Length: 159
Image 1 (tube, rainbow, N blue to C red):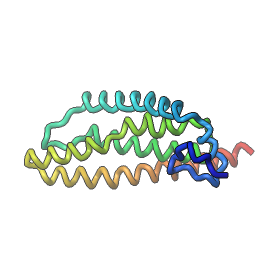
Image 2 (cartoon, one colour):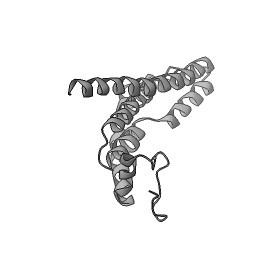
Image 3 (cartoon, helix red, strand yellow):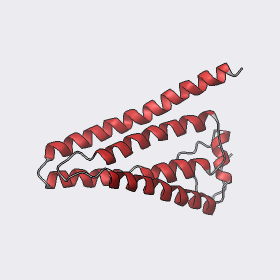
Image 4 (cartoon, rainbow, N blue to C red):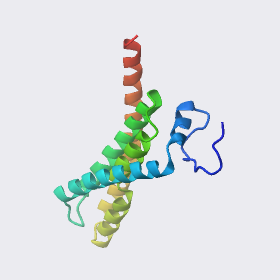
């Protein structure tokens, strides 16, 4: 099944998977509204954490690091859940793109690193860049792997 040419297709939708094709049923305005609403919630949560845990320019930006790693963990969990148990067409845009996309902040990650270099702490900047990259990749993999195993175990126990 191919989508009609007038509808944009999300590049991470596999048109060979029926559950993924279900996301095409949502009207583009509804998808944008879901993303925007989720983005507001995610960005407010991130801003609150960064305000609660400020750091000096030469210090390690723990709030941004934690937000990005936790956000990536939750993205892995979400993808595993939606793979095992498909949901409505607005769930992934709202939670994944909106809430978690607004929560994580790789633009601030780069600004934090630049500020550390400018303030004379290139070692902190390099450690932060590397720790965030590896931490985020490990977190998304762990979220997906652990959640997939737990869902498979729960599915087997339910039978």
